[in-house]
Each structure stands twice: as C-alpha cells, then as structure tokens.
Amino acid sequence: MIQQPLPSLNAWADAFCDAEIPVLATTVADVVQLLAIEEARGTMDAHTLAEAIAPDPLMVLRVLTHVSRYCTQLSVEPPETLVGAIVMQGIGPFFAAHAGLRDVETHLSDEVGALDGLHRVMTRARRAAHFAMGFALKRQDQDAVVIQEAALLHDFAEMLLWCHAPALALDIAQRLQADHTLRSVEAQRKVLGVQLGDLAQELMHRWQLPDLLIRCTDDRKAQDPKVRTTMLGVRIARHTQHGWDVPHALAALPDDAADVGKLLTISPDAALRLIQGMDQ
Image (cartoon, rainbow, N blue to C red):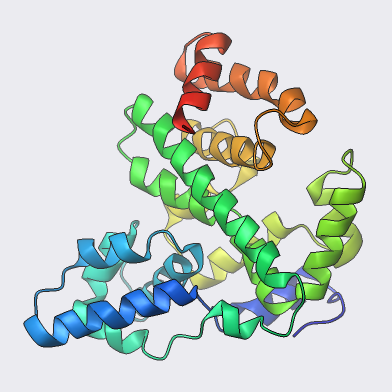
C-alpha cells in the first residue's frame, strides 16, 4: 500500500500502471460460474460475459487494459467497447487471462473505511453511466455504448487510489466531508500533489486504450458533445450521490438541468424532469 504522496504525476502513473486491479467478489463468483458453464457446454459468448461484468468498473478496466496491451503487440487498433474487447480476445483466452482474480473485499480487509469508500465511488460510476447513456440515446449518438463506458470509467483513478493508497483516499474524502465548499480537484492536489483526472489520462495513454474512450473521459475537451454527454452524467451522479434533496444537490441541479437542456435542445424544466425520471 502507498502511505505517502508520490513526488510527481509520472511517479503516480508508474505506481498504478502495472499494479494489480482487484475486482468485486461478486464478479469473481460470476466469472467462476460462467467458466463452469463454458467448460460444461461450450456455449459462452461475449455478450453474456460483458453483461455479467459490466456493473464492475474495475473488471471492465481490467479487461480493456489487457486487450489494449494485446492489440499493441499486434499493432492493431484496440476495440472501443467491452463486448468488442472480449470478442478480440476470445472466450477461452478471456478465462485464462482472468483466472485467479483477486477480490477487493480481501484486498482491503485490513483498511478501515476503504471498502466503503470504494463502493461509494463505484455506485456513483454506475449512476453516471446510466445518466450518460440516457443522454446519448436522446441525442441518437452512434457511440452511446462508448459514452456509457467512458462515464463508468471516468473516476477509475479514484477507485485505484482506494485500492492502493486507501489512507490518502480517506484523507481526501474526510476533507471534502468537512468542507462542502472545497472542490474535489483542490483536495486531490493538497493530499496527492496531482489531480486524479490528469492521472487517469496519463494511465489511459500508457495503456493505449481506444482513442474515443480517452477523448470521452477528458474533461478538457468539454465542447465536444460526446465529452459533454459523459461529463454531465458524471456531474449529476456526483451532485446527487447523497440524494436529490440535500443542499449540495439542490444548489447544483439548476445549472446541471440548464446544461442538459442545451445538450438536448430542451428546456431546463424538461431536462430536470428527464434527469429525475432516469433515477426512478
């Protein structure tokens, strides 16, 4: 475990680039069960596998990084979606590559509060993906699935921080809880010396993930409608993670609804009804 902040963005990227990515215990159990079906019947397919592991952002990240490295060796472009990545790899090689998965519950068993912190980020990521997919479908965006995965993975660096530097992740969380005016990026800089968004971009480039996925998670390209769709899903999930009626959500939602309205060319009131309806 990393106990102290590292000296630079490159140092953080070096530490996380080849670090093991643990996954949820439920994912481990699902993969074992699906392997048994494949061994007994030989009927497993990429869509079934993707559907089973899609709720686990860490497993999605693990699969995409593994396949992207494989594609780099072959000098071919990596697939942009989880299903495409599994197809590229093949069913047998998928199970071989992800045999003996380590679960985060065991990995973080001695770190007080870390598992709860990680679960909160993962829950937020799933909601972000749900919102982003809804907005992308309203826009009839042909890359809706990539946008959904981009929103799911947008905060993966924070997830890795909980996995490999839980004391520092907890410090950031406590600072944000103590001061609701403190922005996340400011807390990250104070504790880590870097912003997690910058770390995520550096890692995705090192892993040579698909260009569209990298672009959709880059908040600096906010004028791009695909990036904007991803960002709004992430923003709304973050603002409403503690409920719709808490002061933070009530203060942020008017601006969120206005921005969604601009993206979808509907009124802010209609956008707010759409957003809230998505979360029913």
